[in-house]
Image (tube, rainbow, N blue to C red; front, side, top):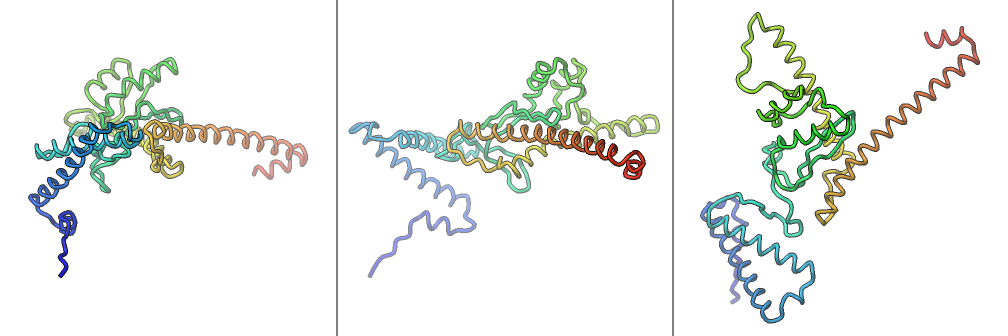
Length: 287
């Protein structure tokens, strides 16, 4: 009679609604298995050393050792967050970024801080670590001043940029930062009704201008595979992301040149038709 042995991991994954105690028990076993294997490899190191490993194997072993340490710390402290959390052995630099969107609580990939000036997109910051975007506003404005020799009149930014520090900075240099004011909203009355109507109109106009930045991300994902970066290394991934925005800027210049070319060509054709058929025929065509 044969005895059937079911692995504990298979028993766990078949449980559709495991309790917290069951999850911790299964996690503890998996951690112990990996820690045992790491200890065995460490014992082999004393005998033969790590020179027998390839560069990729040694890198993966280092990443796995750090991953096990992080998971053990999370298990011990019953926590769900840790600084520099590793999610992938092949891409250990990728971090979870909390977004709270409808399709998922977290996103994985690079976080970008970009600006849009006259249709041209510039990447100011590319980071794999989550950060607060409001820290980049001053640097972006100073970069604009160095390039164009003056401060911008209006900065159409997301609400996260409207911190007290950024508002004081923009007020110092006479820059209007889009969005509603901080604190309690104005109470509408007969005296300030016209003022509130004008402020809301400006806010809607700034919001429609700011949406163009979000549109650039959508254009990059939809037409230039910004969301399908398949490179393996960190440096090549960053280069591929920046190349996408470079190609998008080149297409903007191409469309402008093409528009100017066809506009000039149309003017030439109209002038030749006018000369060939006379002023009367031209008036009929224009009508």
